[in-house]
Image (tube, protein in one colour):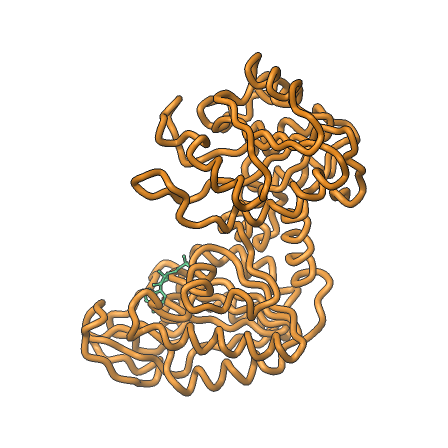
Amino acid sequence: MKTIADFNFENKKALIRVDFNVPLNDSFEVTDTTRIEAAKNTIIKVLEDGGSCVLVSHLGRPKGVEEKFSLQHIVSSVTNVLGVQVKFVDDCIGETAEEAVANLTNGEVLLLENLRFYSEETAGDVAFAEKLSKLGDIYINDAFGTAHRAHASTAVVAQFFTDNKCFGSLLSKEIQSIDKVLNNSEKPVTAVLGGAKVSSKITIIENIIDKVDNIIVGGGMTFTFIKAMGGSIGNSLVEDDKLELALHIIQLAKGKGVQIYLPVDAVIADAFSNDATTKVVNTNEIPAGWMGLDVGPKTIELFDGVINNSKTILWNGPLGVFEMENFSKGTIELGNSIAKATENGAFSLVGGGDSVAAVKQFGFGNKVSYVSTGGGAMLESLEGKTLPGIEAILK
Ligand code: AMP
């Protein structure tokens, strides 16, 4: 796996695919610079070697050229984060871009306009990718958030760089973290899978079942398992067409010696509302008219014990409806357990959609080993899929 550490960028122009798809407020100011900061290591390495950077990214989902999606809006934020005055041109291919690149000197950073102003970007157009390839001597992909897309700038462009292409610092860290959990893990390995539905996690379960010792199930998924095993789940979230599948997973795990831990008690509510009346009951004894929206205290203790004994932990998906305060305790306590295990030497990776939001909301970000920056890309990695953006660099 070639990374930026394998190159000396002196006198080289690096074409870097970054993920600067950052949130903007109504005044077009960047409200969260996490993604810009995530690309900083790669950019600084190129500059310190004595090279220059040509940054390409998408922002939002524009239909053609739309001023509100212009990357011009983020120039000052990128400048602040990098501590280097960033230049900008209003095109990402063609004469304007090529001229700006030709005029770039060592130590400078140039940001090009939104790639998605051209529909050729998401179409993975080869001719468009070839035009992009003219804008750098070396291609670096550092955009994990779009690594699962076979777009022109994330995958197709790589074919125009034979040996001179590599992973950026962020992307290589993402790849190493997933590898550390799934392939080079210290045992026992525990995967916590929460969130809403079994159907969206089934491919992950099937892929990881040979690689983990324990699977903790939480969130809305719980009730499909409980119902399948004959429990009463009241009005809890359920996928009736996945009952057989749930039983199949339980059998599969048994056969492989993998322990599945399901919540033993639940915080139930008489409505899907933070103001609903609540009580705690056994997960398989939920009365009609009530729904399970969080795990109960016995479950928190049970899961804490499992996490405590784990050396590698993967966390994807909340244990309850954490967006409502009254149903956030299970997710918060799980975060605390993982933080404690991490402090005691376990490796913990949090990734995929809502678990990252939960980790950020409750301040666990710096208490786990790694928080993935890519929702969809992370999920697809866990499902065992080869990501086009990664494969293109390895070819
Ligand atoms: P996912 O994107 O699959 O990780 O699902 C995350 C969503 O699952 C969050 O918005 C949670 O509110 C929701 N969720 C978690 N637990 C439950 C539950 N017991 N009932 C309904 N939704 C839940």
